[in-house]
Amino acid sequence: MHGFADRLAGGTVAVNDEALEREFEARLVESSTLAFRVAYGVLRHKQDAEDVAQEAFVKAYRSFNQLRDRERFRAWLVRMTWRLALDRQRGDRRRLARETATQETAAADTSDEVLARERAALLWSAIDSLPDKLRIAIVLAGIEGHDTNEVARLLDVPQGTVKSRLFLARQRLKEQLQWTQ
Amino acid sequence: MDPVKDAALEREIERALAVDPSPEFLVRVRARIADEPAPASRGFGWLFAGIATVAAAATLVLAVRMVSPAYRRR
Image: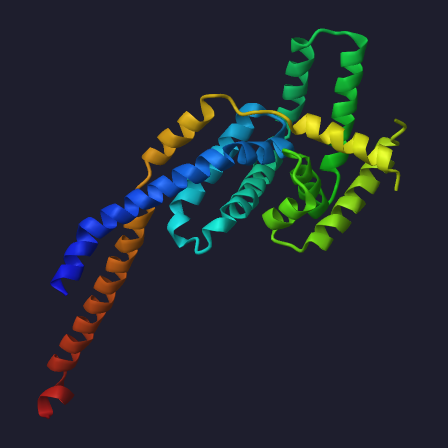
């Protein structure tokens, strides 16, 4: 018993800590862009997206030892980041207008660029108006070219569900944008 | 469904999301996490706190029972 207590108090805890730290660091490196882009997909503001992604990583770190299936880390992180980003968006919708204004002044005003910006603004407005389940599916599918299998793993739902959500989301987006391309 | 329109829409969304975090982002996250207690230690801390609480409660119950008149009469 004494030996066990010693191990808990000393060596084993240190080794566990080190192994966990190393594992978390690896997860952080592989998932940092994903978390950032998920937050960016909601907020469209780089600094806000970084703040939210950082908050999500801190939360993930605090509970990392309680995550039984570590292979589901990315799905877990995506859900946390998405919720935090929505909370942030509800808290400050004015950021969006500020970001758009900044982009507008930073870029040269050729007619093509103005057109592209207008299209992007319309697209985001249409994405924002989607129901939450369709919205997260379309954002995840748009990140790093994720296929339906990867989106299904990230959302922890069957692939068929993702396919139907993406179908519905694209239908609604095309209707709203009156896609003529 | 028109596959050409779908592909164009997908490309447009991918383009809109192809934004990278700043190079300092990871550095900031690591610094923020360094301020946090290690998760494994935290887990054992809760374990020890739980054991200590149960032990304290058991001792208290035993002490109360030992000083009660019913226990003394036995």
